[in-house]
Length: 267
Image 1 (cartoon, one colour):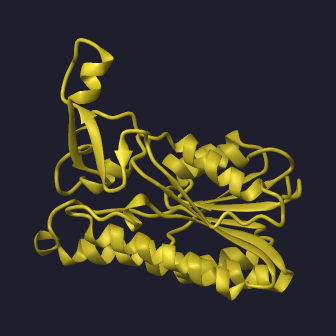
Image 2 (cartoon, helix red, strand yellow):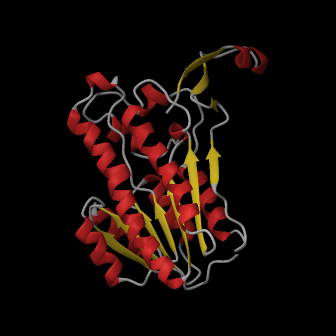
Image 3 (cartoon, rainbow, N blue to C red):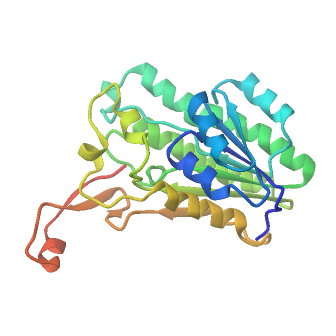
């Protein structure tokens, strides 16, 4: 383990899903957690449950609020860019312009600005770790994925560029890119204005859990100081690249079930 017991870990999008799982995974050990999200009540309830946690309610798109947060709290030892969203799965020509902008501003612009602030603090101190939670969609396109996949591909490239920016320093940069994750609000938020559900889009497979992603991030951060995990792709067993295979129905035995699969587009 290389992270000091009194390390400061900042997690964006911490009020639910992967962000909440990350908060629980990193809690304890004398660490201070900066939990960042918009939903104050949820964030404060989570912070009360976790030792060393501080609720930092703000909108990631508010650059002034982010700068104020960085000025108020000690420079983070670990900054985890997890906040993000998707809007619908219609073809791009059938998607509202406001939805496209919402994805790009939240996933790319706000994350880039947060990274700029965190990176500046780490450079001054000469050490730190930035972790970007992207998506398998950054590497494998699918129908209706346009703005979301594009935004996550941008964060993949940001990770690569940061590795060059911090070459020769002790600052590490990692990317964890999960496929389908089941126990989050991602799908519900994605379809809230377009209909649909997690079950309709991703049903029939055993997805990753948010805790699986948190475990992967924890490994990246806790690896020895000379180790940088640059990219970790995580998939459910039933997801391969940009498609997933799911059972078409009950089968008489496992052999028959393994042969009766339907290949469908994945997140």
